Every structure is written in structure tokens, then in C-alpha cells.
Image (tube, rainbow, N blue to C red; front, side, top):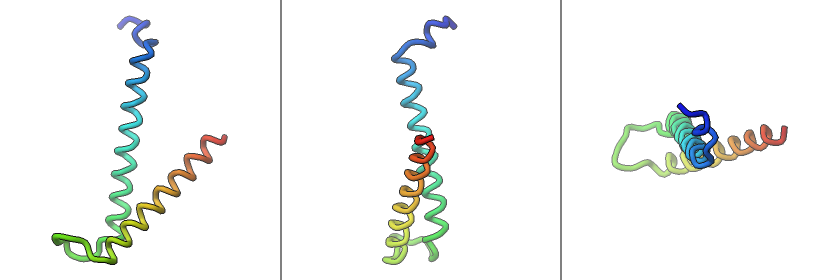
Length: 77
């Protein structure tokens, strides 16, 4: 492979975009796993109970807040 290809700005942007997508997918998978295990307690039916909906919403919000705080701390360093 020609080394100049690696310095191509379009390629770098594409790689960064794909990296961001992969990190987002990883975050969603982790969020789903954590919140599902914590909040979904009954048998799986056609809909969630009111308490499960509330728990899932709160869990997702807290998860996102902690993730953002963590990312901010790392970028401050």
C-alpha cells in the first residue's frame, strides 16, 4: 500500500467516523445489558410494565450522565 494513502484526509475522516460508530454501538450494547438486567424483572410480554419503563428510562439517563462525566474527566487531562 502506498504510504500517501494513509495521509489522505478523506480516508482519515472515514476511519474516524467508523471508529465513532463502533464506540456508539459498544455504548448502546453496554447500556442495554446493564439496564435490561437491572430493570426487566418479569416475563417478557408485549410491553413493559410501568415500573420497568420508569426504571429503564432512569437507568439510561444515569448511564449517559456517568459516561459523559467520565469522558469529560479524561478530556480535561
